[in-house]
Amino acid sequence: MLEEIRKNKKLQLIFGFIIGIFFGFFLYISGVTHYNVIIGQLLLTDFTVLKVMMTAVIVGMPGIYIMKSRGIVNLHVKQGSAGSTIIGGLIFGAGFAILGYCPGTVAGAVGQGSLDALFGGVLGILIGAGLFSSIYPSLYEKVLKKGEFMHLTIPEKLGVNPWFVIIPMIIFIIVILGGLEYIGL
Image (cartoon, rainbow, N blue to C red):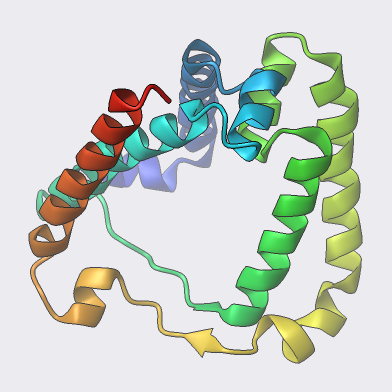
């Protein structure tokens, strides 16, 4: 069944659309589509965004490896570089700092009717993507490929069973989340 879904591009688009709606809904419910929550995270006064992301890691990390062990998914780790990470971080950070949304939360905010997200965020994403794609060829060799690192997961890099990384990471994140709740953040 999964192979048929992988081959059917129309079905993939339908699944992607449905999953995107649920993703946006959960972003909205968690509160991270609200400008004040995002700015509170940047000012280190509201840790809702961090809590949502850490919770996603707690669910997603073991979930991916469970699905991988059952043959449901394959991991395709993309090779990266320091250059592409720095440029991507600067672009993402600039947009995040200027508007107070990331690409996921901007989509959720548009869904809840935020005009600043629609006109500032969506237009900013489109303009930024257009500008980046126009300078990409000249950046690729000079900047984006600098400092390449291997396309390995942390367990592969360490040469250990993934669960030797997943379980301590989950415990660490739970301790961080518990600490944030304990101090009232």
